[in-house]
Amino acid sequence: MARWPSITYWNRVEPSPRGDGLGRGLSADVRDPLWFLTRQWQVGEFLGEDAASPAFVSFATRFAPLDRWRPRAASPRQYDGSVPLEALSQNEPGSPDLRTAVELGQLLEARLVAESAPDGVTGAFRTAFPVPRPVELSRAQARDRALVGLARVCGGRATDGLAALRAAAVAAPELPDELDLPSGGEPAARAALEWLAEWTADHLGPIGRADPDSWRPDRLEYDLQVSAVTPDRDRVTLRAEAGPFGELDWYAFDEVSRTPPTGPGTGPDQVRTSLLPASVGFAGMPDPRWWALEDARFNWASVDSDRRELGKVLVMDFILIQGNDWFVVPFAQPVGTLVQVDQLLVKDVFGGWTRVERTDAVDSAGAAGAAGAAGAAGAAGVAGVAG
Image 1 (cartoon, helix red, strand yellow):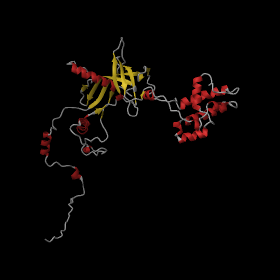
Image 2 (tube, one colour):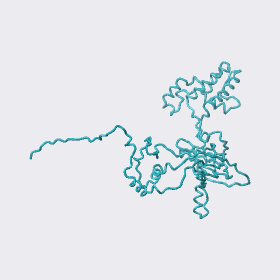
Image 3 (spheres, one colour):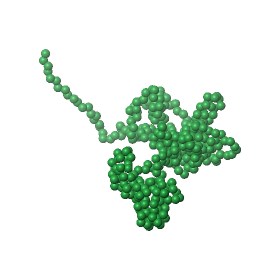
Image 4 (tube, one colour):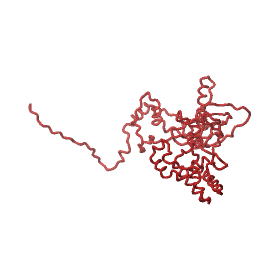
């Protein structure tokens, strides 16, 4: 059977506009308005509520500062808020090394010259606190070629400033016993050591190998607690869970205990504030306007959610359906304080007032409601911490 070649032709279909304007295409004419109306009725778009947007929000709040912090199992320490809690709980001394020892020794020798020290004082420091030679290094230090090279240059020829500072701290207020100073060299040596100690504290801080008090090496995490007297005069203790970078944000605190007041007294005064709410916004949020151009930084259409992933389904429902119905209030509070919201009033654009009840309000209908409110009370107390 003969096979004949075939020729395939392709034709490109293109529109043939009759005008140069785009007005008709952008006008989005409705050809069947009745169908649109019935379709809206079918999907429930006519079932609206007489709801209004908030015009402003009024707060009645009370603040209580954090006054104590406790690292691990140590005794509580006073906290005045002048220093961030991260700096107190995570501050650790700088690790000593040979380079720092040599640099501090050079500063000490230069200060001795500035103090007009007699001949032989610098040599006395080099003899009492010498930089180790390569043969005097430990086995671990000998593996570092750069460290061995530095010891080869400075070993036995310079002063170990770290060793001099440690000896001076132990012997204070006297001079170290290791020093064999010439006659008249004590005033200059004492002044130089005092100056070096102040300079090191100002520029380098503490030097050592100890861990911070709140560090737990067995768990590789920080463990600390803070406490304060709440506006209701309860002594509440919160445990802090530091973030991946050691930060302590407001959500890093969980209530672990609460002690009622033991005597009469009054709490802090209420602070009343009125603020303007703003619509909730986030990166890639769908724009509710029809012809608005979105930034397209996130493709929501590519999000694939299974019915078992309730968290993702709730987020998508909020983003696509209810995102433009939520508002946020730019409420600010002093850093390092607990806040208790006694009253929250919302006035809408129709002039109506709505009182938002507390999430930890106890339901007297049954014990189950009280138990649930008790759990919410702990969360509400944590949410009031400003890190």
